[in-house]
Length: 158
Image (cartoon, rainbow, N blue to C red; front, side, top):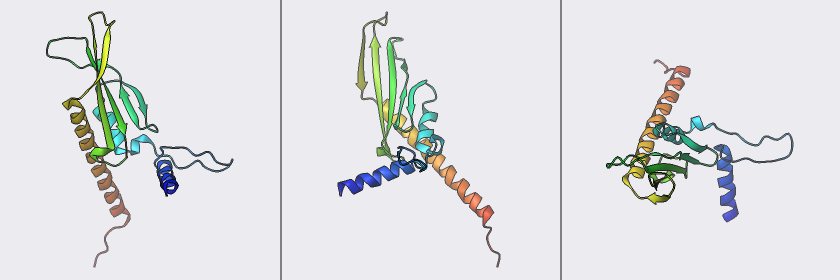
């Protein structure tokens, strides 16, 4: 039973472009979709467009930003943040994403630094923004498909 579940998951990953299959020569490795067709991926990239990305692996299901100044109330430029988004599913659901925010605090010379995972409102705000954007993109995609299908198959007049 466990093996059949793995086979189904493997097949689903191939169909979604999240894996690769090596077979005999002359056989195709599967159908791969580009990241631009995945609304969750596009929404995440759009949401995080304010900071450079250092790793954006569609097949690995992860996006990591570079360190950026998180700003603080006391004008301390030694506090930086890094955001990691892990995709657990392509579905537009709250449990399909895991958003982590790390904080790096350094001394004035940026020599001695401490890095820690922070539990803050920021990660939830980012997750909500991504989900809202993904839902909007999905809605627009569905509306476009409906419109195209109506052009192809106009309503019959009685």
